[in-house]
Length: 302
Image (cartoon, rainbow, N blue to C red; front, side, top):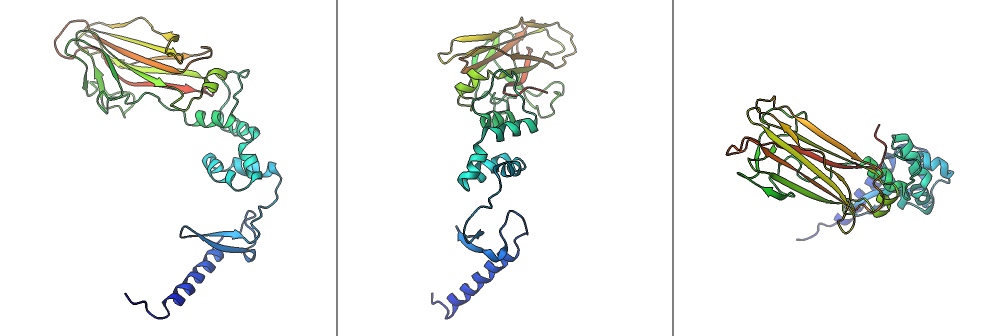
C-alpha cells in the first residue's frame, strides 16, 4: 500500500496535540509538580505525565505514611513501593502495617505472640477465607476423598429445607451404612508460612452444617485433626456422634469448634465428616452435610 504524502507529519502533529491535552487535563494536586514543569512520555502505547527532573516531592516519611494509609493496600505494595527507595522504606516498614492493622481492627489473638511479618499478618487477616474446596457439592465430589461409601453410597441432593445461607443449593447425602469423606489442607500452600503458624499460632475455626430427614433417624459424625509436617496428629476435635430420631423437624444444625494454643509444628488440617441412617432403608435417607468450612484466623474475632 502506498503511503499518502504528508501522513507522517500529520500523525506527529496529532500526537503532539494529544500530549498537550494530557497535560492540560491533569488535576491540580499537591502530589503533582506544576504542569509547566512536566513532560509526557509514551510507555507501551500509553501516555504518562512525569516531572522533567523525575524527583519525588521531599515530604517527611511520616507524611507519606499517612498518605499511604489512605490508599488501597495492594496499590501501596504493587505501585508505591516501586517508585523510589524512600517510598519502599515506608511501604515495607513495620510501623506502617501495624498502624494499618490497628485502624482496620486486626488485633492479635494473644498480645504476647507478635508476628515477624506485619504485612503478611495484615493481608492474611484481611483475606481470611474458607480453605475447604467444593464445600457445598457444586462440583460433585471433586476435591473430596471418599473414606467410607456404604449402603447405596454417597449422593447429592437439593436441600429438603432452605439452608440459612441462600447460596447453598446442594447437599451431600449419606445412605444406610456409614459414609464418610475427608479433605486435607496444606496450610503452607494456602499462604500460611511455618513461621506464622509456629510463632502466632492463629486460631483455626472449623464449622459444618448437617440435617436429618424428617421421616428417618440418622447419625452425624465429624473429626478434624491438626497435623505436623509428617502428618502426625498434633490436636484432634472429635465429638460424640449426634443422633436424630425418626419423625424429627429436619432442621439445619451447625457444628463449630476453634483450635487455640495448639503449639508449634502444625502444617496440615484434615477435615472428615459423614454419617448414615438408622433405619437401614435402601436409598439415601441418612444425614445431609454441606457448607463445610476451615478458616485460619490470625486476628482476634470481634
